[in-house]
Structures are given as structure tokens and as C-alpha cells.
Length: 130
Image 1: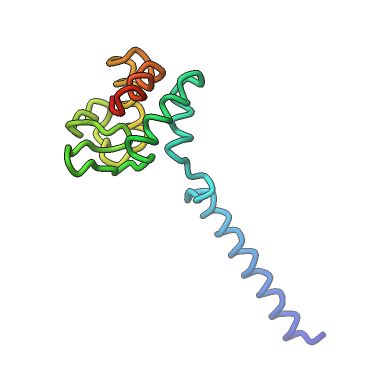
Image 2: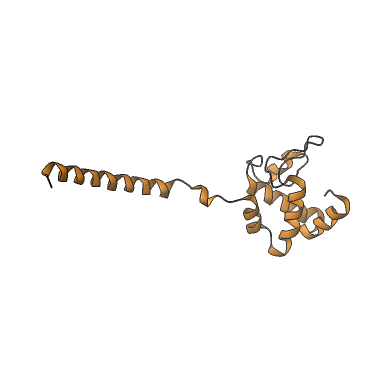
């Protein structure tokens, strides 16, 4: 093997090693889409297991798990369809876009108004609103 070819191979290996190191640093700093958390996963970490199915049923019916769901006739907004939407500010200033804030607000609302998500779901099932 010629000296020129050997030198080029060593330089290529050095460049690849450096690039791999930089990529590894970037991966450690930047979040990946694989680590993304869905609103359903967030709810499962906040709402007790024995209340989760009821909570999920309400949110599914009210907003389809869309953080920005808006009722065109009433103006209710978010996962739990707060009315007025600004009520969710009590759970955090990022209420318009943060699923965690909206889930905390909806969970607290169900507890304070109905006693629990299970009781809120029983009301919803009878009246199709909560």
C-alpha cells in the first residue's frame, strides 16, 4: 500500500471518528422524537389508575386528545374544553399549548366539580357534557 493511500485512510478514519463524537454529543443534548410523550402518556402519569379510563373517555369525547381543540359555538378550548379557556391559566401560564398543564387543570376540575373523574364520566354519560 502506498504511503499516500495510507495517509488518506488515516485522515478519513480521524474525520469519521471526530464526526461520530460530535454526533454523539448532539444526540445527548438534543431531544429525539422517540422520547416524545403523548398527552395520553402524560395523563397516565398524573391521573390515578382507577380513574384513568373515565378521564380518558371524557377527554376523548371532548377534544379527541387535541391540545388546541376549540368548540366553534361555545369557544371552549383544549383537552378538557375549558370555558372560558383562560380558566386553565390557574394551572400554568402555558395553558394554551402544554398538554401537562391542560391535563392537570382538567383533572383538578373533575375532582372539584364532581369528586373524581369516575363521577365526572358518570355525569357525562348521562348528559353528554360535563
